[in-house]
Image 1 (cartoon, rainbow, N blue to C red):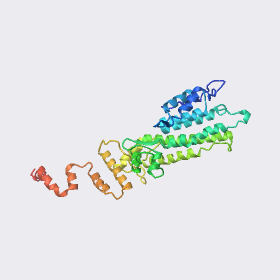
Image 2 (cartoon, helix red, strand yellow):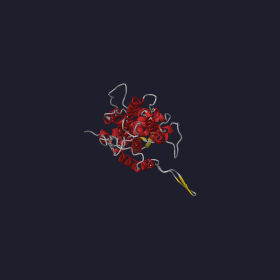
Image 3 (cartoon, helix red, strand yellow):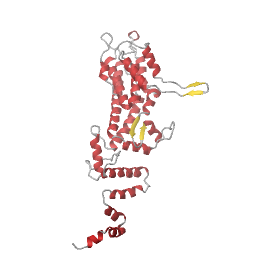
Image 4 (spheres, rainbow, N blue to C red):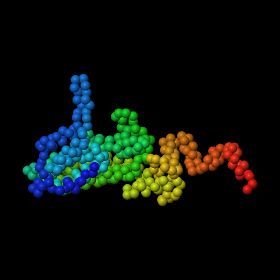
Length: 354
């Protein structure tokens, strides 16, 4: 469910463009409690495990408050809920809303600047710096699915780190790089492009936000979103590499997949120096899909198990796709062709006079 950002860019009322400061309002206090979830508790000999926030309730509560106030604290809570519920698309929308409200209502947004304290921005800066808090945002971002495949499942940045030995699996079996690669090959190309676009947008919104706030408060008091920027850049590099590898294009992913299929059939790619990589198929509908799937399997073994004899056998199978029974017999067992022809009566038929 997308966010209607423009609805929040209107003034709440003529006298108070950002509404009232609801810091001590029961609804605000309830939101602060809701986003904490439930901590682990021990009752007697029984340990009740910690529970994460109910993000749907957090989102609903934040939206209700944003109808009454414009507040950095509520916006950060809202962003976290959107990321938890909508993934990177939600995260990008949350950042866009934060950026635009900051630009539109810097003078009046809550918590307000105190003119008696030389408009000290410290409280606002501390709230904005929660964008780089490891526990509440950076860690959750690493657990948002980057890719989803029916055949291989969902994988996150943390899964990639574990598979590459950069982190330890917290529970269950460690994901394998081959499965992650398979998921990126098999996933919907358009969705992969959308995720990459959300990451690119997020980086732009973050840069715009930092630049704007720096202009308002000066370099000495400005926030640095370097940790979040570094994380988003890492994700951007991964997604961009796979989009290039699959020859997907931001504005026309389906055409790129068609080009890949044509390359798999042996046709010349549009750019001679770089044949378009093949994309995975989720269903087999014709012999071209068979060729495509077999080529993908061969590519996997060449990359991950180069000593395996499987590609040798599969390349022979590839030659047989589309051939009839007798053509296959001539390829696989040429010495047996005469016996087959004899049994089928083909030889007698061919040698009989017209």
